[in-house]
Length: 223
Ligand code: CDP
Image (cartoon, rainbow, N blue to C red; front, side):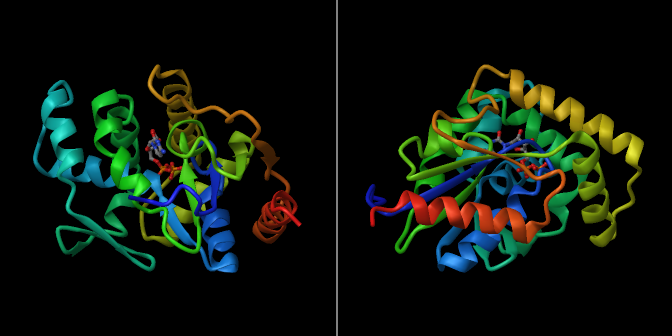
């Protein structure tokens, strides 16, 4: 049973806002564990794609999430012992992840797995509903945003660096569609948690954003 007294920092925000990079660096700095909750939805999507599960078979989709055989090793992410760290970053996988993430039974199936990441000495959790649903009592909650232009540019660079092809126009369209789907769904929609600090990183470097989150964390702890 994860200990409710272990500190948690939640970093939520829209697609390609840079929250993953910021969250990992904050975790590294504090020596905390890191939960990339989006990776769990991406892993489920990859497993669904490979098994050709139709999008209208909710029962089979929830089962795929419930029986996700995955593990994390540093930056490497494994699905049934295959290193899929790169495969899950494809836009097609992200788009499918966002579709199946709207299904409440899929979200429910991943609930316990996410809680299990709360281990000593602490956790930085990144996603869409970390502060609203999964860790509503986190000591520090951050909602990280950036303009669509800044996010499309970041995602473009990320995809090209990973050897995928990409173009800015399609990416901006994808981002806008994904934002709408993630924000308008009825189950755990993307929104700032109550009490979350808002951080717009459009004109910030990663290090500046990390320093801001660490500053808020230091200030949130009792003296
Ligand atoms: O990399 P990107 O920010 O685009 O997405 P991600 O964090 O890898 O998440 C992929 C998709 O999973 C998102 O578009 C969301 O629909 C979904 N997701 C979610 O619903 N809840 C979370 N806590 C994390 C991701």
